[in-house]
Image 1: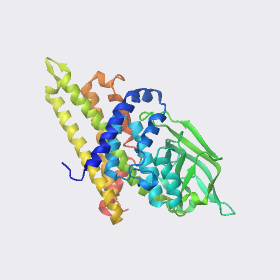
Image 2: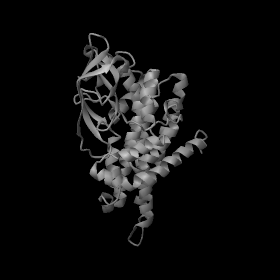
Image 3: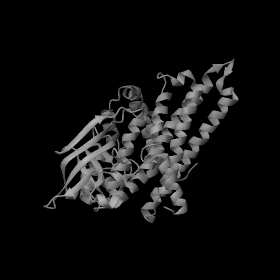
Image 4: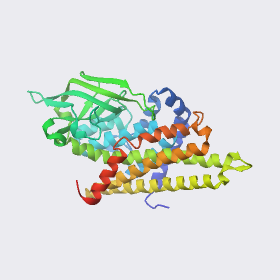
Length: 387
């Protein structure tokens, strides 16, 4: 149907589908219930190449494109969005930023370790008092007198994979007076003195994806671990989030896909008033609208993937395409899972079926890596050129 989807794309999609069904499906419910981080299957995903699909082979990755990443991530998230969250962070937020802005030494040392599954990466921008307003962060990095290390102090919040991360791409202030222009990015090794992990957050959804605060007290970061130049942090963060939003859109699509498939199957099996509930017009309308939203989301994601791939040659930002995909797919996932529970009735509300997990997991896609409100702002600014 789409000539840009090659046989190689289909192969990695099938590989992800098979792995998810074989290795993730049997444990997803238990890990959601307990909140335990599925470290064993996460390591396996790294060994199979899912943590570095777009990473060039010279840095330990698979060397494929954004579409391949999206197709594989969607399949993982159809089974469990928590595993997909970790996969998204390592591909989009961690590796992409270092590949685009890092030195050769940084790429070989840090991207290779994460892409091969040897280590786990994370990305830290948000603080307790600065979510969407990144220019209001309080954490600081001050260059020491010798000019060899930055002394980092502060607290960051809502860091995905922080309880287990080995390496973190961190954004803090080197010039607080400059607001956004005073943000600088660093690559942090979490086994060094001055780094501390907070308690795991008890979340509504993606519960098996471990999230916590991280704290820095006179943490010494070598100057060679600065990512980009001083003051380039905000630009790096926003560029990376463009890529990350394609990942979250793909995650949302996977959740919605799973909810739709479950609803179609249930509508064909469940009987009421002497007939299958799929024969009732109200159920048919719900399924038709769910399918339309799912496929519209898929097309927007494909468009964003192609725009990102084209940007490597043109240098043109793909913020508009990424934000549209993320906005529509996330809100569709929330809507589709709501309809899915309604179709299933009381069974949809029960933890005996995965529908309520899909519903809980879908909500976060409207929030992280830029809320729906932020996405609308990005889209509108792209259209008008006004700030």
